[in-house]
Length: 119
Image 1 (spheres, helix red, strand yellow):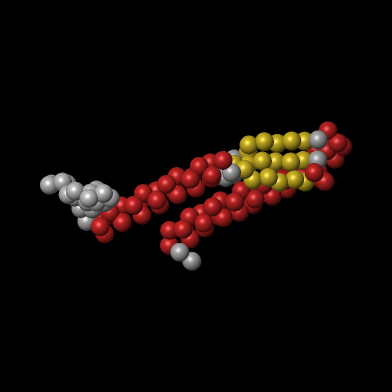
Image 2 (image 1 turned 180 degrees about the horizontal axis):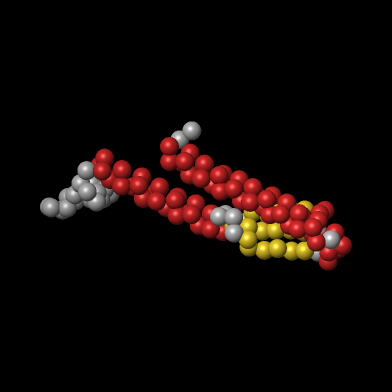
């Protein structure tokens, strides 16, 4: 008859099961999804940059998620501040950038935990 498929001996019509156990298959799929999500979060953490400014925007700093300095920009007008004030501005911008990077990392990690364990 049209539209009906004949049964082939030895061939199951059930969906493919890697383990033969539906519960184990479900757990393996869940672990695979979580691993993919962890890799995405890890990549986003690696690419995250914290940013901070001081001295009216004349000093700007970028740091990596771990706090390492990635970029420092000093507008020539900031040189008029004098060495001590310029140093303080660099430190202030750096602190702001580190806080920004930490906030980004926290947001990424919290989203991972929420995805993994729920609210």
